[in-house]
Each structure stands twice: as C-alpha cells, then as structure tokens.
Length: 326
Image (cartoon, rainbow, N blue to C red; front, side, top):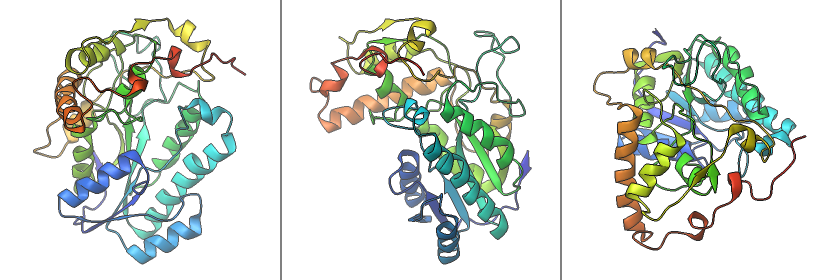
C-alpha cells in the first residue's frame, strides 16, 4: 500500500462531473456525504484553464473522470485519434501533473481494458492480472492511449489510479455495460472482471479520503460472463428477452477495433480497502444490482411492459450495418 499524506476531504473538484457519467454520480455521492463539491468548467486539454480553476477553487481532492470513450462506442476513437490523444493522454496528464505540483490528491478513474487473456493468465484459470503487470492489449486505439498513460501516472505520488472495467449502474443509461449488450442481437460469451458502480464508487471516495495512491484493479472480485449477465436481465427485467452468441472471430468482422477480455486480481484492492466498505463478489453484486434496477425501472414506468424500443429492436454486435476494419 502506498499513500499520500491523508488530508481532510473538505472540497472536491470533479473533472467530468458536469456532463460525465461517473463524474455525475460522484458529484451526487459527495453531496450525500455533506462534502463541498464543484464540477470543473475547464477543458482538461487546456492546461492554463485547468491550473486557473485549481487555483480558484483550491480543492482538497480532485476526482478525474473526464475522457473520451467515443460514441456509440470505442470504435469512434479509431477515426479520431488526435482528439483522443489530446483528451485521454495530454488532458489526463495536465490534471495529474498540476495536482502533483500543488500537492492535491488526485483520483483518476482509468481502465482495466488494457489486458487480454494470455498463456500466463488463461481464460477460466482464475489467475488475474495484477497491478504491476504490463499492459498486453493494444487492439483498440482507446486502450492504447490508456496503456500509455498508466506508467506515466504512476510517477506521481499524489495520484490514485483506478482500473475500472465494463462499469455497471442500477439503470439502463447508455454507458452501462448491461444497456450496451442488452441492445445487441448477438454477444460473445466470455468471463470478465467488471465494476458495479453502486458498490465501487463509494469505495473510491473512501480510498481518496484515506490518501491511497498508485494503481488498483478496481473491479468486484471474480468474473462473470455476458450470458450470465443477460440471464439476470431476463430474470429480473424482461422474461421474454432473447439473445444469441457469436464467436470473437465473428464479432471482429463487424468492429473497427478489437475488445479487451480479462480477469483482474483484486487481492491488493481488498487488502487496502478502508474499514467499513462492503464490496461483494461480482456475481452477488450483479444480482443485487439487478434487484435495484428492477425497482428503479418500475419507478420510471419502464416496467412491467413499457421498455424503450431500443431494448426490443436488436442490432448485430451493437453496430448496425457491418463495417470493414481498416
């Protein structure tokens, strides 16, 4: 465990809190805990703006969740590489570097999609990638940029780097992993480490308060497959839901970029987790998530029989018409 000198969390500045998914949830979480919180107005690729805002707000802690993942998915980054670099590389470094200069603890919501199963970490073996392992997946430009960033961010003693994977919320927001695959006609069926945000985002705040720094695999312990997730969707959300599988090779034919599949080792995370924080194994956490999701969708009027059309009209692989890879 490495840690920065823990300071009281008196004011939080969130990059990505104004329009971002995770940043928005962190804003609400801070408010719920009675912590003064401000959503950053500056664009992270503009270093002068970021520095001016840090000097103006004088936060005790920074949460950095801004970045580009692409719309509708990471394939967008393949055709917009310069913009992806400016935000995901230059922008992230701006925030981390300035926080280090000013002695501010900075939590970066990064990604664990920088690995793929290999001979040392075979699919189904239970052997996960650890924090010190070197990224071995560069099948998408998005993952390449994230892979570049991690060794640079580790240099900063004020920086906490959280490897989030396939994040899941208690609703069907379009960024939610469940919402993505529920719209697909076909899915691959591969066990993966995933992040249930209801449990993990409060954990990230507790880790920041504790002053933890360095890299952490930020997923619930264990793995779960696409089919297991969609079976829970069928159980709790839509009993008439149907899906089918295709192979990774078939999936690759309709995507511009490959996708990361892996298991992350959470031993370090669980050992260093502040007292009182509850993190369930991924299968338990998913079951509880779908129970909350059902209640939320009922309150929204989506259930029992008013689900939006996009969850009833599927597209192959989530991309619509097949595209040729460059």
